[in-house]
Length: 286
Ligand code: PDD
Image (cartoon, rainbow, N blue to C red; front, side):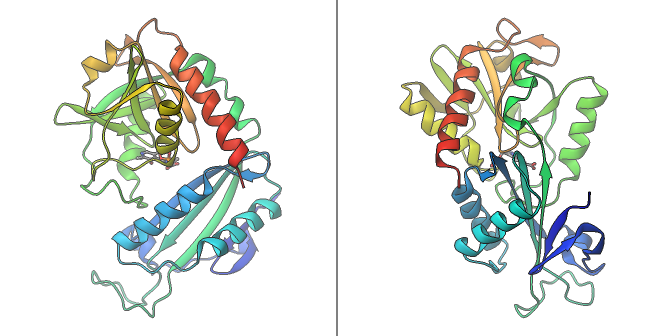
């Protein structure tokens, strides 16, 4: 059955939805996005995604076309129209269609293009992979220098994901100057003893909404959190590793570049953090 998608104020069957070939999102990857998960028909971590969207737009000097209340109404409507119980809402805002292709930004009277669609994923929170864990490889991080802005320039993360698939594993961890930055579309963590270690926030990584929640819950659960760089060798020698994202929640990582992490099975901390994250964010879902 055809999905209903949202384009610039209209809810349309996906076959009828159109964006201009002159759209700067298409020509220049000049746009930002958010992925928000839906569990039991409700939005997970919605406020965080709204706040980050506003920040990404502002960093690129783009207008935010809606207030947080308006966004919430649109998100709820697209979820309802598509009958999504478990899945995700994808939102993309681009700098729109100025008519001619030009490197300079157009004036503010060019309206941004706003697109939302949903993907249903029944049983999203019960992913079998959470029981077995992911295997990852490391590859160089050659993305641009403002990874804190959630732009739609996703070619290198796609190439990295393909490299992982070709290597027969689940994902790639990106490495710059000898240290892990993050996964292709997730934040990376290791666990040593009672301590969760993850790279500090900067322009080098996306400021994950799931990361913020997990670190808060970890501190509340009396776990130590250390925000600092780590290498692949340190990760391979850690007790556990995991990643976080809006679509995978907390996902254990059991192998890095062919070396088992800890016992090579899903660890206690990752399992516990996944449980806490899902419990707490479900309670706060809107
Ligand atoms: N990706 N790092 C990168 C590079 C990401 O693309 C993502 C999210 C994250 C985790 O952020 P959050 O916890 O806010 O989802 C970290 C989304 C899920 C995607 O592109 O599908």
